[in-house]
Length: 428
View (cartoon, rainbow, N blue to C red):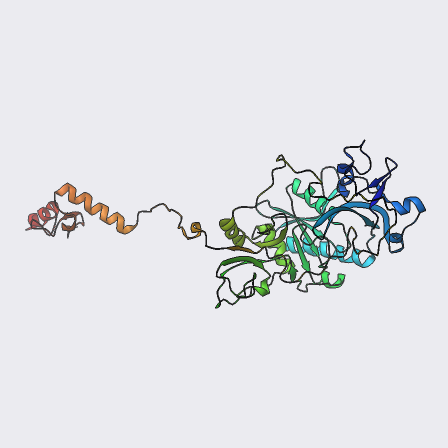
């Protein structure tokens, strides 16, 4: 892999191993070339070998000559590296058919359950903002994106950010565990079906992207081994597990169910940072009750203040100060801008949190307003009558004639009140 790139706008060669990139007269150059692809021209940076010789090794393997700058950490040292961008992908006929079938299925399910569904929903400016916009009874809007063709991570982030800015919760559905949507936005993965199966009523179980909260004390008698040491650590654990790995196992969630539950707010998106590295996060859909429980334990999700001071872009970068090498070494090293992502195991993305003691606030019963019960009301009436008649509360009882509270059981107690006794005496 070359240690430099060619800047097509300035016509200069950039050496990524030098602190000033070989151009001390351009102080903003680093920020410019490390700008995400969705916010700069795709052809801004070019492979040096392609620029000098007209071709490079990467193009023979289906890559484009255009480059992106990324960090790479190897042996505890972080450096800048240039990676080839993929050639833009045109969806195949099968991918397009599956994409269309999934959009129609989502809209059909939503409307069958009384929800509003809009296919190819467009913004005010006329640009498509989401494949299917599903609106719940409360006004919650879920933007479904059926993704069956390759897509870049930057595009996923850009489109998800655009949806959020319009008050839409993005939800990406894919059938590949190597898709760039996995863990980069609210997502759901299903089995690989053809377009005819997607269009039918066949059950489509969500295999990834939906998890449930599990909490346990790590003891030798626990059904789960310790996620830290494989034995038992005596501490408390909280993590998010796939339905089949819960104890007891939870029923799986189907796509049709998620369409309705997400719009109704029964399932909610979660962004769970790792306890040891808050910069690494797992994204998932979870039951709303589990989300609320997690927030009780660890507080709400923190949103970074964009106005806070940020470290320099190259604060952790090591500059090796090497001579510029224009040789394209694509294939000698397995690093590329969108390298196929490894398949995710069932233990990935659990958002494991471990703590020594259960927070005391979880055992505190919230203060509740006291309500006057029937027993309380009777006791209050008895005391008021006792105060009026000058006797003890236990001496109060009902008049045998009209039921009025009277001094019935004390030393001066009577069977009936004076008016009732007078009526009886008058009849005689």
